[in-house]
Amino acid sequence: MKLTAYAIGLALAAIVASWALFLDLAILYETHGFWSGLVGLVLAPITFVVVPWYAGIALDTWLPLAVGYGSVGVGIVFARLGSKASKGRT
Image (cartoon, rainbow, N blue to C red; front, top):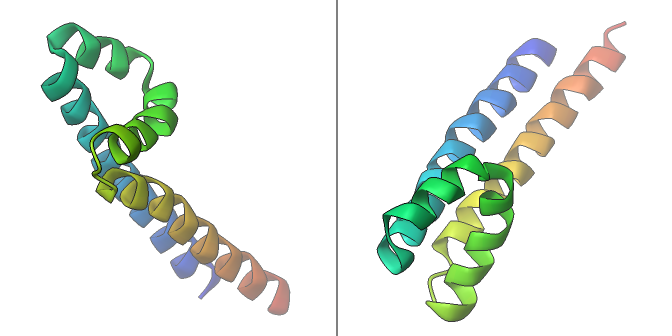
């Protein structure tokens, strides 16, 4: 159980976070052009944090914020489940 929950959490968080970054880059590309999308790719951590808030406030599109921060929450929940299971079986 411990490895399964931990692995599922990490895999799910990585996949959904990648999708969130793709959404963020698409928003940058559509609103500000190619070069902003390229700079957003280079500065991916900043893009992951800032662009969902920009999309929500300025464009009234809250999906990137829900996907990005939701993936972090799901990953944390599954990682904690895996770590609690490993402590219980030691």
